[in-house]
Image (cartoon, rainbow, N blue to C red; front, side, top):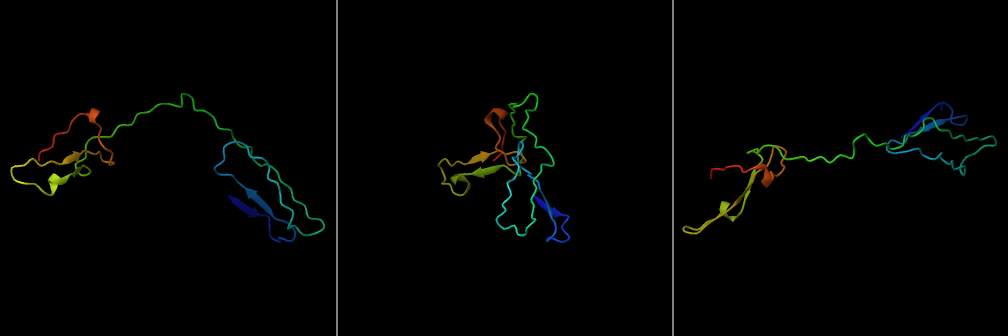
Length: 118
């Protein structure tokens, strides 16, 4: 992020602040490019306003966390397979019901069976 201030007359002076929003650690000072700087008394100064912070571990982390799907939500649960759209009298027809929680996550087999009336 770059912001400019103290710049009423750019031929006299301008100040730019450069903020690194997504940078971990302390950045090296910027090296100015003087190739397009005009004037006999032109000066560029670079200074660090705030020292960057190094990454730090949070006590007890990394921490293994297991997230399981919630209860079955009938509005999100899906059924699929040929047996939903076509079948022949006297022959076995089948389809699959995939139970899902309210966020659309598949329920896991170890979460216990849901009973469905078809």
